[in-house]
Length: 148
Image (cartoon, rainbow, N blue to C red; front, side):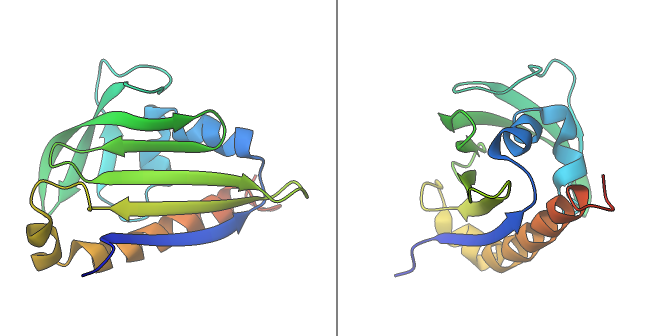
């Protein structure tokens, strides 16, 4: 049996506070997303996410759709995770490296999904791991010396 999680870690030239500021602003999620599926934040979202916050996004994976998320894990400047309607989670962990950089780990966790075998059947773990790599590449570029 698998752990039903895929993760990628990258070192980003930013503080955890800078990164958490982006992650807790749903209006900026489309800028971060390397998969190309997150299109825009829905109207009525909170300005800042915290534990229990609900927020909606316009998405596109083949067809356009809308999704509602709930923040289910939260530790200021260190951890945030949100859950989709099917129960799977997107988790961001931030660990300061002490030199102005941060180890960022993004995880797609379908261990809590209502129907995990469908996620596996659709090959979402491999697709999402690729998207996570692209998202972390975007973050690296956003905070590079020539990207800011």
